[in-house]
Amino acid sequence: MEPQQDSGVSAGAGATTLQKHRWQLPLIVAVAVLAAIALAILAILPGGSMKEAAAPKHVTIGILRALDVHDPIVASFKQQMASYGYEEGKNVDYIITDYGRTADGTAKLAQELVAGDPDLIVALSGISAYAALDATKAADRTDIPIVYSHALVDPKRTLFNSYQSSGNNATGILAPFDELVDRKLDFLRAIAPAAKRLGYFDLKGEKDFAYPANLAVLKRDAEKFGFELVPYTVNNPLGAAVTAEIQSVADSIKPGDIDVYFNIPGAILSDADNTPIVAAMAVRLGIPSAWTTPTDLLRGGLFTYQYDLANMGIATAAKAKAILDGAKPTDIPVEGAQQVALFLNPDAAAAARLTIPDNILYKVNKEIHTATSSALTP
Image (cartoon, rainbow, N blue to C red):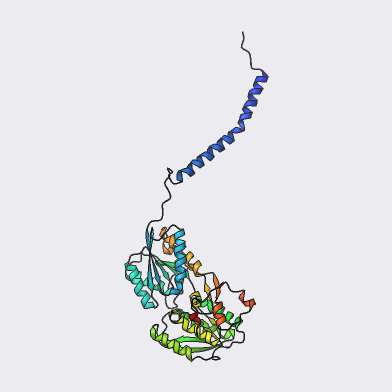
């Protein structure tokens, strides 16, 4: 008997069966891929077979401080470093210096910091930046990288070769707060439209190069805003003698002698012993006062324009991480601070009996209240 041939019906049924299952193939492949992904995810979880991502190696970071006004940078820097995996006491140790206060004092702290052999130095302010550079060079330790923050360039010295590449073992963030002088003058004019006489302390003993840089801008631009400058000479350098002298000069200024006060950046008037004296003077005279940092407002100052120090700490941490990851300071561009905020102390305004119009108050980015009421006592 001849074998029977497949009928057309049988062939058609076979084709139909094949077509029925063909659409399932992509689904099967997709399920297999998803299963593989799931297994991979399970493998990297605790207890899985794949190796966990390595934590950053243990490092020591030195933080060189000149003044306490930079402490907000330290706080945000450490917080951002923690977000990068550098946990204090676990895989990072911080050596935080005392306040150098002067160029000489900061230079000594820088030398001690370099002797401690840190993996990285964070230098807060221009004074600290130059001190760290000098200390690493003198000790033949230019292998120690430096990241500076809130730094003003000394007109008499080079801090970096170019913004693109520093040409040395440092990089960082600049804070040219001499550029903020005009903003402060403009705000003084807005809140005291009839003011004419602008008082300031002419500090003969000031060693901080920020002072002459800002004073030069003030002398150049005050007239443009309709102010006549009234200097009050103070001769002593930073220390107990200058505090007594500032108190004596402040006490000698009578109501009507000046209409507004301008605090010029520098170590002397940023000192915790001296700021409250001048702030209380402005309150006693009932006049607006322009200051340097938000810390000055905590001590009784009225307002300031300042770079965002918290944001600066975050940006400083980003540069530090890049270096700890293997980059060289010369590979990381030097940057200028960008974010500027207006800070106002309503307590100081109330104590000085100043009324600031609502159409001016809207410009304020942040209010800072005086830390202690005694700071406002004339």
